[in-house]
Image 1: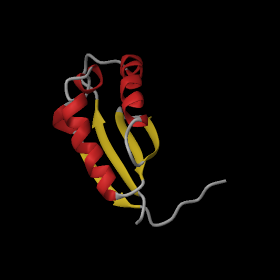
Image 2: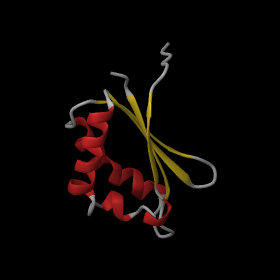
Image 3: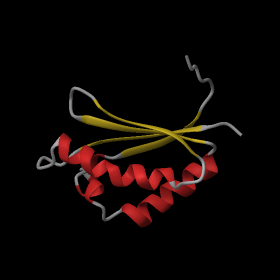
Image 4: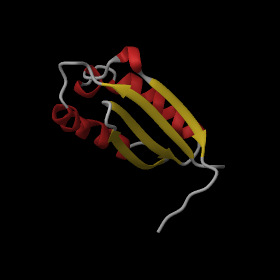
Length: 101
């Protein structure tokens, strides 16, 4: 099975700072390390304030299971409380090619 790239794009609520958000991210990092099929993650912010949470999973089934678990286990977390829930877009894509140094 192909690896799957999970891309979640969102903006923060006006009262949340990038520093507060990245500090709260530590909870998510701990949670991710415990998930079956987790390969890697990049949390990025672009110039217009949009964030991208990019996670690679071993396959689509494990990606979907983790997404469901995340909403059950971290829905009320400080990390999630800073995200503008009206602006969240989540997609899963099969990885067709990977280049590593």
